[in-house]
Length: 530
Figure: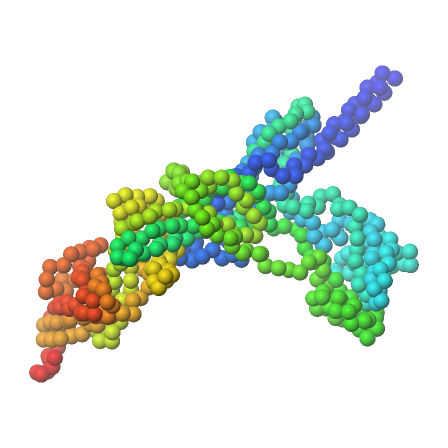
């Protein structure tokens, strides 16, 4: 008896331990969350984020409080980002640590719901041609190869093969199917304990962009510079009241695709017994709402129509206070922009917050042409317009400038007029800022040969300005060599000569230079040539 009693006690203890080990603890949502968004490293500064396929990523850090029983438990973190990268997840705060982790890829969908309900009772709801609704109990016997076989009191039949509208109604969701993205871990505790844990992970499907707006002063010498920080998410999960940051720079990030989810639609194949002539038009229209409903074709039942992510921009902030502007902080070699108050990073959406407010920045508008010595351009050519400044306190800047697009406006006839749009690369403090904005139709250049001999050719660059104000013009000669001999001493930029002048209003400016021809390339010149 003592031996039997000991064996019985051991068996009961083993069963109790197994029951404890199989306990499931579910955390429905975080109590606090922080989202740090990194830009798509492959996107050009002037290129706006592709709202259908965001190439950036986010670091999500969640704080959750949960109670663990003694022994091993499966802890389910529901409501994580759909683009979660499982191998990046870090969980801290469990007294004994974690044993394993897993991204639960089985999402609730028509396909997974059916597959996990085989052999279970469901309600078969039929809507007849006259609109009468009837319900029958049924058991799902098979769901393979696109044919859902049901067993009812009248025998076996295939779903949606009667020619009328049929719907399956489930009493409950089978275990293991999550309505939201879920990460599960197996944790261990020596005794029941309430723990505050932190879950951090990387997730794909995010991006951000700086969008600059510059208003030009009346004398064209200064701009009022403002910038939006535009956050974008194509993830299905929303993060309400999140501490939100954006990181500028290019961390060494190896792109990783998230674990594919298993939430397929339901594909049915059927040859309806009824004909379309037996079905009222309104019922037929309801059936045809399922894509491609005809004999021998696939019917895809998804529960709702497939829609592209609704990535409409949030309403812009019209009143900006300095206190509401994102705070710039150092993050090693990177720059971090912290939003001063929590915001909601909503699913499939964009959000704009103020990032920069810099009034009265000293600038110059420069018309600049790049020329190759030895090439004629007898047809007048429009000249690109550049916005030029230095990222220094003396100019009214002196702060890191993340890459992004910029629009330049000038006041005209009582309203702002867009005069150019360009791109700004990342600029550190002290660097030159030069942004190409547009081509100025009223400023043109011509290059022609005015005299030539066997050993040299003389060129003239003609700049014309039909505007009612003087303009600054620069010509760069990046391909200049020793053969290039200007008629005056020129300054140099990036190791090559450039010519700078002021072209008067409705006037012209001329610049002449000589190009020496190498001896082996010289040819006789006919007399009288010009």
